[in-house]
Image (cartoon, rainbow, N blue to C red; front, top):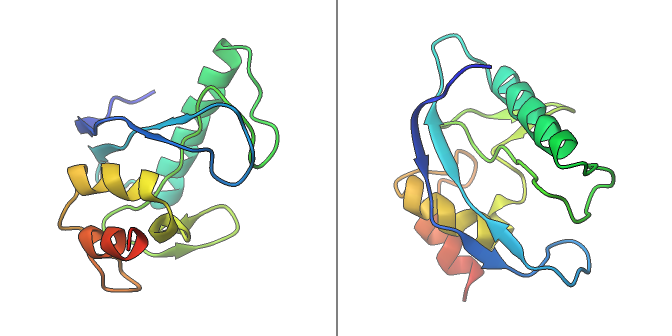
Length: 131
């Protein structure tokens, strides 16, 4: 397993469950890191998926179901201005603009990031969402 370079971590954002009912609050945090030359969005996605599976196995939790309580859920939101649209991965995440718990950490980590489809900065997407 590689060690990521330039790792930065956002504050924790607490939110209501998204996509299903649960009595548990969600704790959301963003992580930004530098990719190595030659990395592809799919290779980064696969490595993050592997990390998530190892954590779930170590905590004796399963990641079954699309929306369910889990010890950890890792979503790849964006890689610079890359656009990917495949069955395995969509970048940027297609529902990021609907999720305050995604945009708040992203605002801390990458305030100048511009969505490649909409041309909007994180601040604009967050303002539209919280109107």
